[in-house]
Image (cartoon, rainbow, N blue to C red; front, side, top):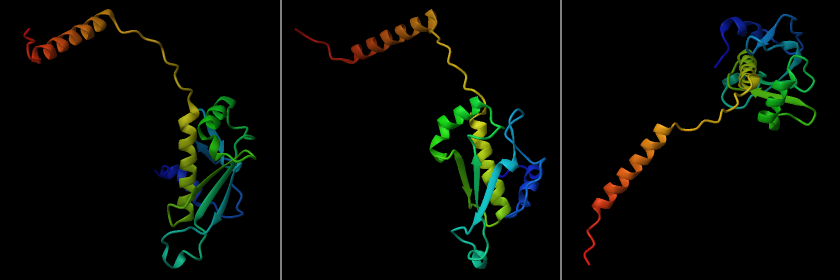
Length: 163
């Protein structure tokens, strides 16, 4: 589930207080790219196993993104995103994604960005509207014929009624 190595390399070098370079982007698809400078990362101590480092190293990553104010997100995608993931957005309009799956801060940054990419990818394309279809005349006739045959089969299983 980790992003490919070429895209992940820029994520591994994010340190607290470090400024992200202008060229780095989160590639959702060919039409949707979000500059990493729109995201704010904060780091804290992770729960779970970690050996001697668990109480010393801030490996949990919290990604904050002011989604309502983002110029990179088209209004239609924002509307679909809010419809599906609106519960994850705060009242101030910030989306919060956390990751503490790995013991390494850089891999957790990449994991949180990958989670966000998957969320955006799921709403990036508009759902296709359903076309109303009717079964063909032959399909209706086959269904009714099969129902009649099944009914006859069950009727033949019954004991004959003698008056």
